[in-house]
Image (cartoon, rainbow, N blue to C red; front, side, top):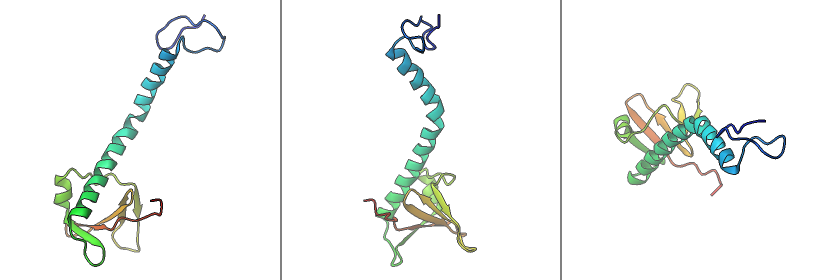
Amino acid sequence: MNKCPECGGSLVGRSDRKFCCDDCRNSYHNKKNRIENGELRRVNRILKSNYIILKELSTKRSITKSGRIRCNIATLLSRGFNFKYFTCIELDNGKNPKYLCYNIQYTICKNDCVIIYQIIDNGNN
């Protein structure tokens, strides 16, 4: 007779039954998903934090005529921005790469400056 992988109890009923009850089945899969999705949740938290920081800066600062906002790298770092995490990168012909954090685009310049571009509207609003 097989045993439940969660509690070790006996399995009664169908021959292909894997868990003794719904509680054990749910508990088993919740534990499994918590381990498997832990890294994904951690990265999503960082991306969300980065997005909020960029969005706050783009609404609090004055936008130039070209639709850009300049700020120092130190300003972003002091707010907890993590430059290692972004959702997309676009490479131009020899120019600075443009990073995206969801729909906000930014470029890191050589003079310790970051240029945040207007929020890109992808038409899904």
